[in-house]
Image (tube, rainbow, N blue to C red):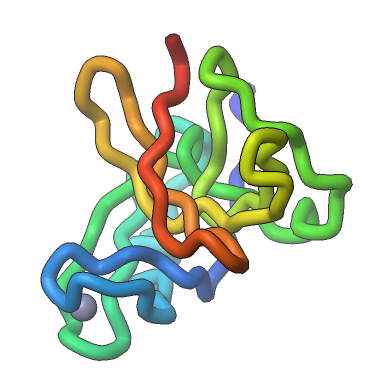
Amino acid sequence: MAATFSPIEELDLYCRFCNKVIPAQLDRSIAESGRVLDRLSTFEYYCTKCFKTACYTGTDLLEQNTQNETPRTYKPTDHFLLGETIFHQSFNEHGVVVGKDNGTPSRITVLFEKSGLKKLIQDI
Ligand SMILES: [Zn+2]
């Protein structure tokens, strides 16, 4: 049996339409549809500014109550989660994963404390 999955309800996500990082909310209509939600389910978030939606699967989203783990160090071979705090050794600073781009290779958009928004490859 697949384990149920509860994504974080509020995430700061990069909105392509606003072109900046905006708080996004999980769309409750999908979360409460009654079926079992696992990591393969799709979750829809809407931008609290322009109300455009973006869909992500559970495998791309941080689960509730896993927020306060020690940040992972960024490595292009790893897979990162939306909402996850990571540490980048070359920049020597922390950032939060705020977006995903499922091209080849897959890229994450990370908001760093000082360096601002950066696109980094993952899953190579
Ligand atoms: Zn927006």
